[in-house]
Length: 348
Image (cartoon, rainbow, N blue to C red; front, side, top):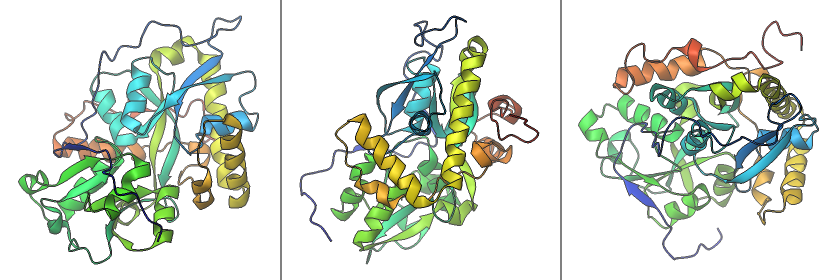
């Protein structure tokens, strides 16, 4: 196992707050222009946030030539789905993605965003595991009382999965409140666990597999064990953006969906090679070695087509937990497959 540096990992400690989407500023979209406009008055440039050492579907779509004359403008990186869709809701970017439960919460808070395509999910190859060190005294849900779990953000996938695991383990709401979530940048989470700054680490995708290759850790629980395969997160656009830019919306979602389908239908080695090529060309001084561990998008629907249950599950769950009022959010209002070329009955 390689040596890790001994200086403390920067973390943000906070008490357990269920699915709290931290909105700063107004949920009304900014009035600033979204980007360059064409002759038809629609924007021809999509602003987005990236992820360090990873490739987003808009970036893949651009590399594959699916975007046509539509341009991308990278405005920086994020480590948080809720932050990404918050930035979309406030008009700082034009499109962003997050856990579907976080999208439900954002919509319930008054943000007029709509999910248009699924972009990550859970299956036997692509899942989030919650790992402990070999020999850890934490072996059951009850052992987590008073312990720290490292996650990339609050109010998203890892918090929802953890809350469900604790509930199924028989913990009362008061006991659940004694489980502390610690926000750690994903690239530092494994290190924080090995240095025992946290007791459990939420790890997924290539970062999970890279950590597992070093040994010394094992899963306490996983999302796929709890819920089975499902598309877990979607990309959203603001409703006013869709209304003002129907042609651009169709181009963007069509290209995005085709990029998702490309990863679903191509050999793993081809996808890995393409991702490495994209990271090298964009020149952000990143380490692309983790891409070697990519296995699956985890997206359940072909081309990211969204199913009712992928939102209804979290609407029902949030209503039971009291975080969303009954009927406050309807699944028919929160997403659309209208622009996805792989939707049932599409002739695109």
